[in-house]
Amino acid sequence: MFVRVHEVGPRDGLQNEPEVVSTEDKLAFIQRLVASGHRDVEVTSFVRPRWIPQLADASEVLARLPRVDGVRYWALVPNQRGLERALDAGLGHIATFMSVSETHNQRNVNRTVKESLAGVRQVLGSARAEGLGSRAYLSTVFGCPYEGPVSVSKTVELGLALLDAGADVLALGDTTGMGWPALVQEVVAAFGRAGVGPELLALHLHDTRGTALANAFAALECGIRHLDASSGGLGGCPYAPGASGNLATEDLLFLLHAQGYETGIDLDLAVDAAELVERALGRELSGRYFRQARGAQARRAARTA
Amino acid sequence: MFVRVHEVGPRDGLQNEPEVVSTEDKLAFIQRLVASGHRDVEVTSFVRPRWIPQLADASEVLARLPRVDGVRYWALVPNQRGLERALDAGLGHIATFMSVSETHNQRNVNRTVKESLAGVRQVLGSARAEGLGSRAYLSTVFGCPYEGPVSVSKTVELGLALLDAGADVLALGDTTGMGWPALVQEVVAAFGRAGVGPELLALHLHDTRGTALANAFAALECGIRHLDASSGGLGGCPYAPGASGNLATEDLLFLLHAQGYETGIDLDLAVDAAELVERALGRELSGRYFRQARGAQARRAARTA
Image 1 (tube, rainbow over the protein chains, first blue to last red):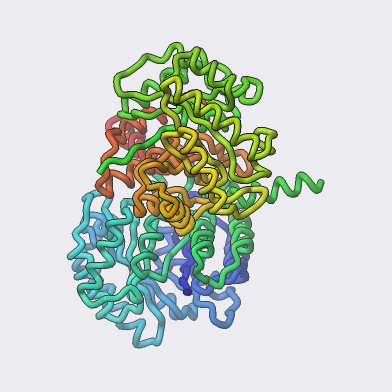
Image 2 (cartoon, chains in turn yellow, purple):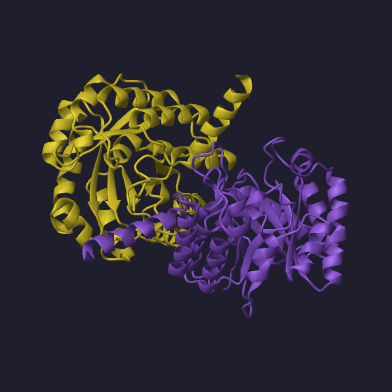
């Protein structure tokens, strides 16, 4: 059984790191991710450069990335203007985003949920007309840091609207890691009752409270075969209070392969990719599997030295 | 539904930390764990002090701990002599240990599995005769760092022998965090077929590869209601290569409470306990929930300042 792992490290990871990684290092990182077998890599974001200086080189990254057969490069696109920049850069796959939570959406993009939905629907329609692949992120599905619990029926209503507008896949985001397994299963079941099967859903999990992999396992149990993860757990700086890293790619791969799922990704090579970005950042990444793998390498090197 | 959380931070956590925590700080830590609602706390180990200098003050810790109604203090006991020291110290609950893996057992205690089993059975018999409560750890159940995969039938055979010798509970250890959910379920099912229900089993998980909470969730799904965890994720020094911390207590509590289980433990007070030992160690603990909770506190303090 195949599980599609959507690597968000270069985008969601790096945008949440205080350090800015050079364009050269990003390109090397992304190429190493692809060499490890990743076929879906979210490489950057076309939001205004002053919002996220870490990703201000979006167009250059895309221009210089070698195209590889079967590899889909994704970028975040906030609005029609972002879409145009993405098209100019030759991007083939876009991700839109909005929150289920009114307060989170306001604080994130200074718009109501209704306004965001209208804008995102327009972008998804244009993307489809241009022949682009698309995924629509819904944020704060499993809890909002401002509002607390989030309505499952509102999530389903917005999700249906986004699929109706042309999104190929709906990526349900546990933006600040507030979810738990039973809630994941409740949300997936609610979509099922609305006629949306797990093949149209991806889960985008953060590990803020340590639950990301347990939530991923619960998602697999109810038929989800599309999961986002971030190389080395990138995006959760351990020195920032309340930092909120993504599910670490290597932890996910270890579990998936142990459970008998195929991903097409080589775990050792995925560790190499995380090691490269760790050096570029100049601080230790928090991914658990990654840390033990690096420790094992160090011990082997010490023995042979 | 009640889940019994067995707190191993003062023992399994501190024995794997490079720093030695003072007896005063240990006492304060354990008392704060008890104040948070913990009823099972593994407080120290009666192995030879020169093996584990971090726990050389075992007798003093036990002598000075205030007895609290309903609270069970546990200590690790390697052999008959350790049991005598534990009895002298007034301990009421002991934990024995041995590995399923021959190589791990040899390296850990310099005995064959057969020799260890004979010794442990003797200790469990004496403990029962003295009216002590007991748990028997079986290590490397879900994989051995030297031998790789571990035979499930050998695990069951040894487990039956330990229960037969008088252990109240069998604590199945994923000593270096090599397990995955399906394997947890396979092992529990194998015990079931041998007539050992989940009420006689506890799971002792390490988070070396990030899978501990997913494995705990899988264990809950197959009826396990007794889980070990370590305050703040103590025991996995992030600066030691290949370090192997226990499942963090707060991550487990967050998941359990969200899923509707009762534990009798207050999560906020559990965070306070971890904070105390963090200060005593002088380095940041790695538990995810703990880190976000401390970050949230810091942000609140900054707002009100």
